[in-house]
Image 1 (cartoon, rainbow, N blue to C red):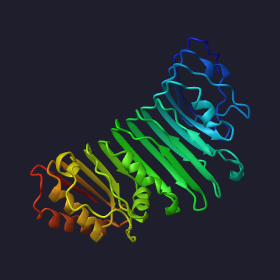
Image 2 (image 1 turned 120 degrees about the vertical axis):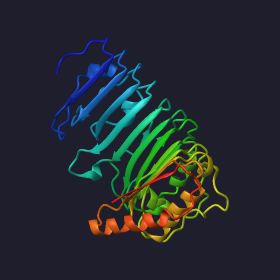
Image 3 (image 1 turned 180 degrees about the horizontal axis):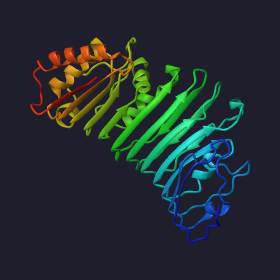
Length: 318
């Protein structure tokens, strides 16, 4: 690894490195006063040994990397980036005994405008806290899996500038996911909302709550939550303004042709006054004969329904 001088502004590494051992970077990198962008791609993983150096990167705005826990504590790294705007952070365990890994609290920098966060460090029988107090955030993509005997709490600010939000939250214990509806309310100004399968399942199994109106929603992506007892929000008696005035694109993945799914799609086709596209993708695990049968029946039923938007295009993919 070459030496780096104090005038370094961008560092982009895209190398094949053994993920078990990671890449040991020179400590001087973490105090470069002019460094604005640090990106580690492919199989590079940051690993500086047990003693992680002090971090102060006063100009860093773009950071993308993977951290091995417990070798690197995220807070020590993030607290040294006072003007960070774009963060892509993947947290992974790097120890044979996962119970020795415990990072109870992670605080995201308040200056963030874009956050992609994947957390694979949560282990059994522990309480975790992730703080996303980032009022200027415009893009959010989070993926977290919570084991059955663990508890995760997430604190966050409202996001008035949100443009795009992707939520992939697999919570094995619904009672510990009460913050998920609160997160939806904080995201109600977003223009694009993507709810992955486990997030939808978490919402459907949560205690009843008032579903927020997404005032600026243009694109909605959802995944089927399979058949389960519904405890979520009561459907509104009035059509939300976002459906009639803003929603232009809907994508429904892993469609299984349940009665609830058909009812939901019919509702959107009838009430969506400015819809341009509704895309339905059949559950990929079905055999081809079943998929084509679903497509044939759906086309026959949905094309016969009067639509709120005369320009809406319906796409059904086997």
